[in-house]
Image 1 (cartoon, helix red, strand yellow):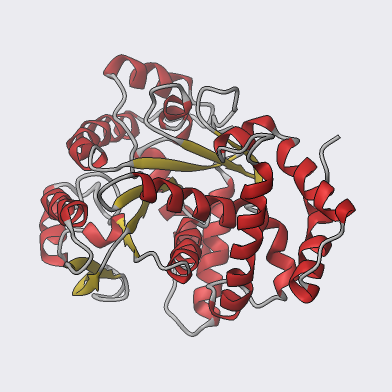
Image 2: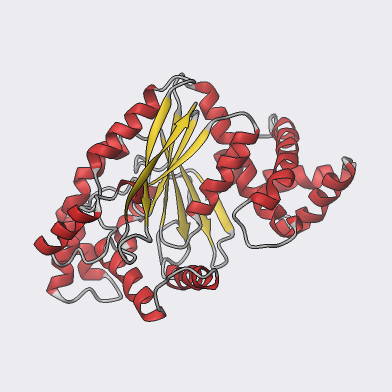
Amino acid sequence: MRPDPQTLGPILEEWLNSGQITATAWSTLVQAELADPRRAQAWGIGPDTVVDQLRARLAWLKSLAQLHPGLPLPAAALRTYLPLAWQLWLPLAQQLKQIRDRQPHPLIQGMLAGQGTGKTTLAAILSQLLRAQGYGTATLSLDDLYQPWAVRRQLQRADPRLRWRGPPGTHDIPLGLATLAQVRQASPDTVISLPRFDKSLHDGQGDRTRPESVEGIDILLFEGWFVGLRPLPPEDLEAGLAALKQGLTPEADRQFARDINQALATYLPLWQSLDRLLLIAPQDYRWSQGWRQQAEQARQAQGKAGMDPATVAEFVDYFWRALPPPLFIPPLTQPGGGVDLVIEVDGERRPQAIYQPGDGGNAGPQ
């Protein structure tokens, strides 16, 4: 029987408070780590390495406790986040450190996840953890590569289907390629100019803003809702569209998906610039609707402008029609699909499975 992740919280909290851990508690941590062979393999942990890995993780846990007040999380006691931190944040940060140590150039880690899955929050937490360990870490969003507002207005006039920013065809791919090339070639004292995008400009249409100058990048976390997604062969796309349960029946929707699939091919050089790619896969992709609604409500509670519920629903559906998750996500989880790590999450965005593609996972959206 696998230990309940929630039983780990009191053990970790006691260790943070006293610096001591009993033999029984230590045994529980070890058993919990080895109980899921797929997850252990994904983290590179085995019976011979688990002790050293967990000792290092406990040291990182101290850093997390110190960083906790400044992390981009809902206000709650640290104990609330300890199981998630122990299962995901800390081992993932450790893994990124280990990979960076093994290669001669900065690590470019891609992060693929749909709207509301928490990819931006995870990237921010990883950045702070890695910086606390002395690794220069920066984040880049696919949003930061949007074409300027004036260019996107021209795109909308030429193709009214591009009514919202976001789908393939609305980004500056040469800018992305140049940025990632600078990061890969950077020395410790190289200053990189990272593009930035302000969604609040032009009444929410958004526009480029002042780039951010960053020095000494060891690890770049490049996140976005279709980072790493690959175009489907036309025959597979047609078969998939015909089989979709939610009914992409209008020919206009089918043609939109065909055109977006074709535009996606132009992003392949950008994906080839990644060293690794991780996928956060909800067990039901439709949960993104509720998560996106929650995000808008949180923005409005802070006094920021936001979309009304009906607009949010239409906005999320727009992205699903552009690149239907049931068609585009499952191929990535197959051997050779381009993803190195899969994190399946439940409706509360808690990890339910962590594995390397091809070892028996089920990350196909339901």
